[in-house]
Image (cartoon, rainbow, N blue to C red; front, side, top):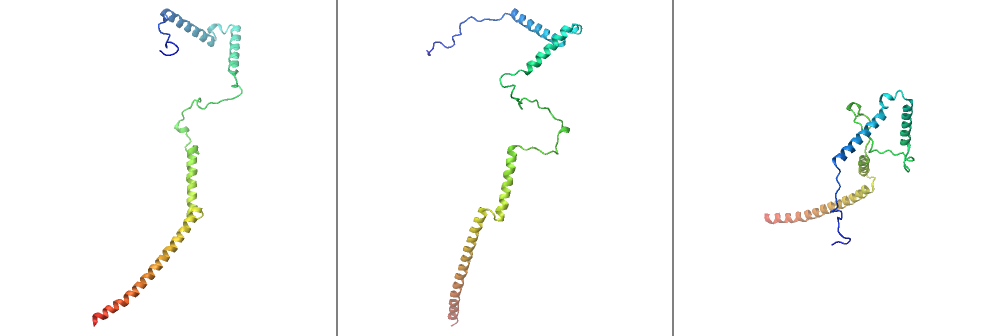
Length: 179
């Protein structure tokens, strides 16, 4: 058994049910109250025009309503709050839409456009050879070109030496065949 005794100790108590007569009485009382409030807000029917005391009472009630709207709890009266989620959005007609006007972009869209422009600027600078990376690439390229030129010259010299060595050997072979 868990500490603290039984759980759900409410079980076994006598339940109280509302009788249908009590429910009907409550509904009739609510309807009567609503009817009285409606009569008060409408001006009380035909007796309102002839009774100045009733008109005075209605004006007092409207003053009370205004005072009630002005009363705020705590700091509410000092801070003017406008909740954008509470505003009712009205549907616009197609004719009212301003298609040609400037479109306001969201923060993400603006950041994306700025990022693309920055990338394009960097590529232009890179192609012009003004960035650090472009300068390093061009220096590396110049070194590689020199190495390739030197390798090509060395190969050409080796080929010339080989050709020069092979020409006298061919000449000797041809002479020996003629004899």
